[in-house]
Structure formats: structure tokens, C-alpha cells
Length: 224
Image (tube, rainbow, N blue to C red; front, side, top):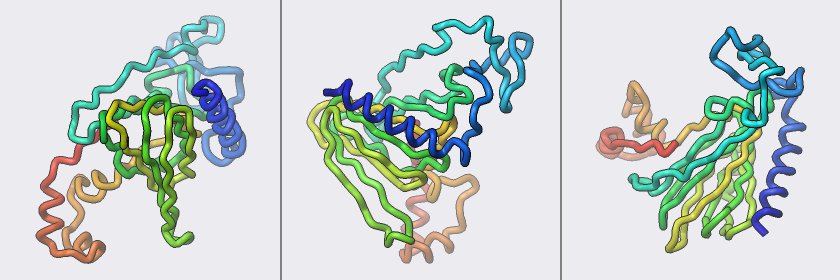
């Protein structure tokens, strides 16, 4: 069942990539462009040096994702697999991530400024959700996902996942950009550098400045 669901998520991602390619990541002008840092071994294509195609082999298109360490305040770890970790993804307009969750572990509310996400549950049970924009009255969409099930987080929407089971959970995130980016909401708002003026946040959240001061003093953990 999991294999079938992963296949469905990859087909959905392919469709998203095809529809968004002209608007976001540039369309590739070659079969592949394995990214390299050594300029002597490559040619410059689409903003990055590419490995000489004659030197490319199957290993350039292979990557093993190690489990993440969930022993942290959030109980989750996102292991990103973008072009920086996997040079074979370069110019292909996609990336992925493995997300590990301890029991009741949370991948906190965040957004990807350059990508839609397709999430496939590989193990465990997750509660997931996203919030639509002001245009759609900030509607909240949520769902309980079990092993082999898939959920889509539309482009730029704030979303999260939490493991509601007693055992570890694992999910595969597929993203429609080779560099999707991530903005974790709490970290960005209360842990910005330099800090946002407390008067701004107190008025925005309609709370006392002491609450804002408390939140800005916290250590906001980054699970990416």
C-alpha cells in the first residue's frame, strides 16, 4: 500500500512541477545538470556549475536518507534533501525531505515560500493541517493520516504535522522546487534577528508587552 501511495504522491508532484515550472524554477535546457563546486570539472548552466555530462554516472542520481534525531524540544527532525545535499536534483525543480517524529512529536507551523508540498506517511499516525489565506477566511483544513496516506499542502500555506500515536512516525515530503525554503512561524516572529519591536507584536497579537517579552526570550528550536 505504501509503495502505491508513494507512487501517487510522486505523480501528483510531477503534475505540480510541470504546471509550475514556467512560473517558478527555470525549465532545464539539458537532460541533467549534476551540481559541482569544482569549476574545473563543470560548465556553468542556469546559475550553477554542472558536472561534465561525460563524467556523470548512476551514483549521481542516488541518495540515502538517514533517520533524523528526534531527541529535541519538538520531538521531530526534518532531514532536507535539496540540491545542496543531493547534487543530482539540480535544475530538476524538485526536492524532498524525510521527517521523523517521536511519539507526540511536532513539526511546528511553517511555510515554504517557493513550493507546494506532498506529504506521504510511511510509518505511524499523523494529524496534519494547513490554514488558508485571508482571502479564504483563514479556513483550517485538517486530517488524520495513517501509513500509506497522502496529503497536499498548497503553495505558501502555513501547515504542520503532529504524531498522535504512541510510537515513532516517519513521513516523506516531496516539494515542487529544488530550493523550497522554510519559514517556521514562531521562530520568525519571536526569534527574529534583530528582534521585532515588542510594541508591534503586542498590538498585532493584542496581548500585554510582558507576554511578548517572555516569548522573545525563549530559545526557539529549529528542527530543519
